[in-house]
Length: 467
Ligand code: ADP
Image 1: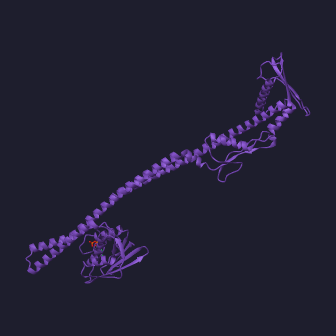
Image 2: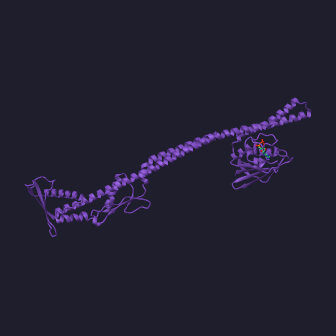
Image 3: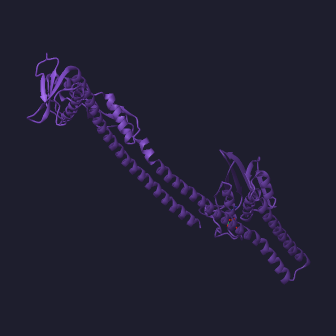
């Protein structure tokens, strides 16, 4: 089961990491493509802002020209029967400058016959004439119809530099139309940011270039705005699956632990029951089969009643454990050791001072009872002496239990804690479960146990428990 849980954990971890990796890769791809889209939109906005700004400049120049034509020229017209067109004559009022000051022309757009000029026809002509000049200028052509018209257009169209603030406003509007509401800096770079290409706004090249460019912070906000719902949605799904898995894992793990505890309990109980049952069995068989004296009968009966009492004690303990065993309480180390040592009449123990431990009394009692039991069993001395040292070491309590027994060869020091493991040469009867049970209890209390021993020099068990 543990293996299966570990496999499940491994599979899920791989799956989870793959999903997270794919998601990060996908987000990275989207981030790159969104950056490209952002840059493309910015570029389009820049081109359209330039066109708009030039158009505005052209409109302004044309409106200056219209005012000039109204105020500073004399316009007349007549019907030309040869070409079947109305011809208009523009004459500069001020003829002081060099060049021609009169021009006669007809406009394709005014086809009607007019024999003489009126304010309405004059205005109509001025507006159409300005429109024609605008389309000429769009094609980068400037006709000097009269010297003053040419100069006027040079001054207002070519020599008047384009206002950068107007360009900035148009750029900002174009960005907004493209769905980008993102601050930028004009003709300056932001550290770590991204800059557009430089757009030349100059209309008259000999004046040199007149650049406009903008700098943006990395478009993360733009990206997040575009992808927010999908990013949050997917990451929430991932988090949800992680939570679900952890919950399933916790449930499985708890069940596994419960089943282990049940196994341990059954093994331990078997071990505890086996000894008195065997003793009762042997004594009753002896009573039945042997021809015993009164004295021997008394001894066997006493043995039976003693072992029956220990079985009764055991069942009481089980009952107690089922009721109180799960409850942690503050324990006096000295009291628990004293109670456990009482079960072994030929055992004397030495312990200075007392320490408080948080734990289950029954369990800690069994730890010492098992250790004392072993100290007595694996001992050739008549008097079993157990020395106990307990002291605080950092945030832990260290308890050293040393006996004057036969000791344990160092090569067995790890394996004696395995269930059913017994040192092969041992003649003493046993089941090899006592120390594994002790270890389980200590680990359940978040502690550790190890054995240090030199053969012939007794055994020392070192227990550490969190304080
Ligand atoms: P059991 O005593 O029933 O065999 P344990 O798990 O208590 O099982 O002990 C495992 C083995 O460790 C024993 O068989 C014994 O050889 C050895 N051992 C345990 N405690 C001691 C000790 N205090 N002195 C010498 N040997 C010991």
